[in-house]
Length: 509
Length: 85
Image (cartoon, rainbow over the protein chains, first blue to last red):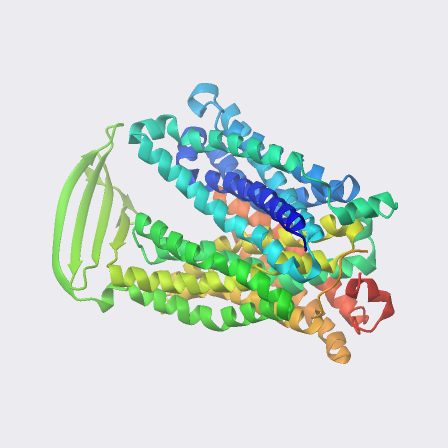
């Protein structure tokens, strides 16, 4: 390959990856700022607002993403990859910028949550269309023996987008006072998006259409109805099903387990302090990200299928052990108390509501500090009784020592490695599964169902399983949520091993 | 191997039906009837989004497997363009 060709290929990868990274950034900042957004747009105690809030959280991820995949996939197979993924970029950037501009509930009432919901749905729609376009575009430019490595850059964008969103939010918090941030500063990360999108748009605008698609279009080989050809034709539809049940379904749950469930487990089940969770997740993800490229590259050498299947198998076999190790790291019953003290206070909030608060701070010999706050709301100076029991909220926060922190980083890093094994080669794998004329449509739908639906439901289903087990006094209740990713990945592994063709394919038809 | 692939078609159909039963009785219906807003949305998503995709997909996949649609992918000329596009 000549130097010119090489550099243009890296421009293509760079422009595609940056755009996709920005789309993930846009999607994540809403999640990262969810608590502050809810106070501005979804007032507490209002059931309709709470309903809209839940809908905004769930619907964008689960329902709208597959629709985006269908809508933009169809466009991409008819009009072309380049124009379609420019539209998704502008749609995402515009929706994100406007979220930062919508006046709060106090100014415009119910229009505020309704507008936020609509903009959030547009974000989901755009995200559904972006990935397939970027992966297809890069793959169709790449030489066959480097396709896994080249498309692996697109695979890093989901993680890099999370980094950048955290950095922009942290930077904004650092530059402003707490009051300024809570008042208007939270809007800044949304406004920043439009600048990034404009830069990415200008880069993408000057790029050429995918050569394989352009060739197919010139020879009249493109599809006039990609949806019908992809899903109405048994011959193609069986491959869509195979992609979903034999690869993407397992990849989706392993990705969500390593990147999101691990974080929720640390914070909610193990009660590790939020700032420590953020920093250890940040380090583990940063250490793991280069492995997306490594496994993408390796898939060019030894094939995609067995790397993905090995990732699923190792994850299935080791999740139970890993999460047990993580849980025991901060299990306070395994530690020796050094000092313990309790402070009782009467707190009055701005609405003159009073709470009786008991805060117990316990220092352990290994440096761990646990703070247990028992808050009992008062009515006319008396504790509130519900079914004969005093109403109270107990919040535990554990600040871990440096050694435990590095142990947890290691266990999260191991899980991120599984993610890179299943996720690194999958773009090339999906691209190679479908012919040019229906590629964008056919690969986008299983990808977004596997990740959005199977993966996206993981936190809710896993939490439900763990909560039910805890209510039944199961001794290892904290591990029961793992049955969901283990079960889904096991079925996917069996289907993948038995039914998927291990040979990598040529995509230029 | 092709016989195994075909026979397992029955397993995928049965799995789809098992997911339907447990999805409704254990996850979906209790959430729909709990009276909480969050649970209501979650229940709707389980019953009207997740279950149709999983159950419908697995049953159709099982039927295709049972009909031998996935046999000899490597050798069947009908599938040639998936191997060498």
